[in-house]
Length: 230
Image 1 (cartoon, rainbow, N blue to C red):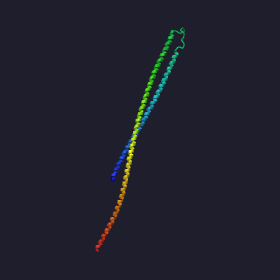
Image 2 (cartoon, rainbow, N blue to C red):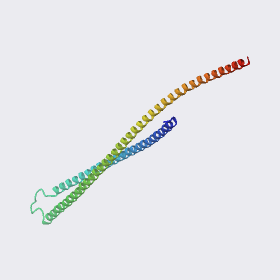
Image 3 (spheres, helix red, strand yellow):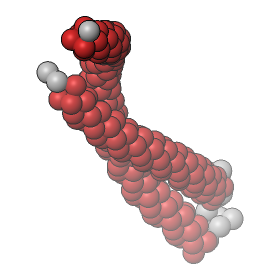
């Protein structure tokens, strides 16, 4: 291979190394952008999860307070019914039938009100429990989706990191190969320069000898001319 061909090959390798380095930088920038976006998405998902948990906690607390209020109302109604029930049955002579009927009607009304309140309480408690169950299930599904998305993002990031590392290894190997070629070319050029210096020295010595030969030839011709004249 001539020096020109070596120089051309070296230039091509340098251009390929520059292209590979630029592509590696682009891939690294894209990976960093994807990692940043993944981190932002993960933070947003965590914030949504925390907000949902806080909202669910508030709702549970509100429902628990509402249930406690309903329990209090139920206890109060029971107490009212207990107060409405007669402690002792008065004698027939002291109370009239109208008063007894009125007390019975009042007692039945209190019992009916208590039954109605209890039915409403049971219905509201069942609806509250169903709503809490549905919200808990929705929160669990959201957590599963977030976990799946996070796993996919982390897997993609690991794959891209492995690809970037592989490309870095390839670029480093190509760079080492290119550097070895440069070193070989430099050594070849140094040897050529040394040989050129030796050749130039030999040519200079040859030129000096040629000048000396021409001078001796001229002197010999002059002697021959003088000898011919004599």
